[in-house]
Amino acid sequence: MVSVMELNRLIDAASSGDPRALGRLCSVVEQGDASARILAAKLYPFGGKAWTTGITGAPGSGKSTLVSELVGDIVGEGERAAILAIDPSSPLTGGAILGDRIRMSAHSGNSNVFIRSLSSRGHLGGISTATPAMVACLDGIGFSEIFVETVGVGQSEVEIASSADTTIVVVPAGWGDAVQAAKAGFLEVADIFVVNKADRDGADATAADIDAMLEIGPETPWRPPVLLTVALEGTGVDALAAAVREHREFLVASGELKSRRRRRAAHDLSMALRGSIDKSIDTDEPTADLLDAIVTRRTDPWTAADRLLYSR
Ligand SMILES: Nc1nc2c(ncn2[C@@H]2O[C@H](COP(=O)(O)OP(=O)(O)OP(=O)(O)O)[C@@H](O)[C@H]2O)c(=O)[nH]1
Ligand SMILES: [Mg+2]
Image 1 (cartoon, helix red, strand yellow):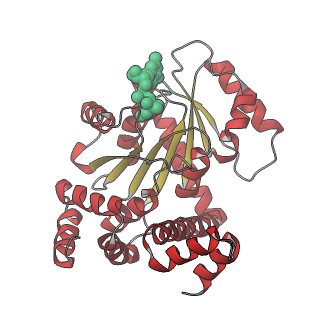
Image 2: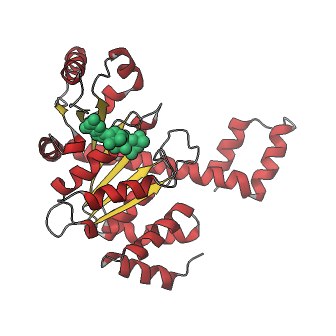
């Protein structure tokens, strides 16, 4: 437990740019105990201003390299950006490697970029349960741009889309299997497609493949652009930054942002509910009685769930 006084001190320090205080706040969020609740209640009213960009794609497709380039192009003068890397392929060094890249990247004011890696800890979606809370915390502290990088496996791309305003799907050049893409669910979630490693063979063919898939898909008010980049050299990153801005303008002008944010509220509420329920099943006395009742068939799990939910 972190005392309320200490939380207040950390919030003040983090708001004025102290990265160590911010790191400690993130640890509080990650632990998810009573202090995390207090912190969320304090910061949530100040949020809602940050733009959250999700970057997903196959392992090694160049997501981190791309983000480190993109951050410099998107973040304006005096603004602060945060990068959350969920399950980087190397849990211990992933954040550090990304940090080195950011420092190396010529145009990013590194003191304005905060980087944190997060573990999904076996959560089904592949995205950390702490992610929405972490985004809310950074938003409330005053970060104007938040990037969430996650490896696209199974359901994680769907999850990231629920947490982001703009979702970028990164596909490496030469990745030609259209059916695979459709299966992976990338098509549904992408606001912007990036074919990275365009210095390699097959980039145009991959882009054409994606274009063809979009063509046969349902007509939507926003047609995801398919962009080519060489993240390693920063090529095409300015066009990507422009596309993110354009998508943002589209969401605002069409009113789609409101419905997206509402969907996100529903998603976050559902995650919070599930989190609370899981915790109460682990720890609560009344639940122990219910479990006995289920095992001895005096009740069934569904009736017990209703009782648990509606008796509070
Ligand atoms: N040839 C080439 N290599 C690239 C390009 N972009 C990134 N790479 C390389 O691809 C490798 C993976 O890059 P990362 O940025 O770590 O990829 P990632 O998608 O973040 O990887 P994970 O987080 O492990 O899934 C690194 O060795 C990069 O240097 C590019 O445009 N061209
Ligand atoms: Mg990465």
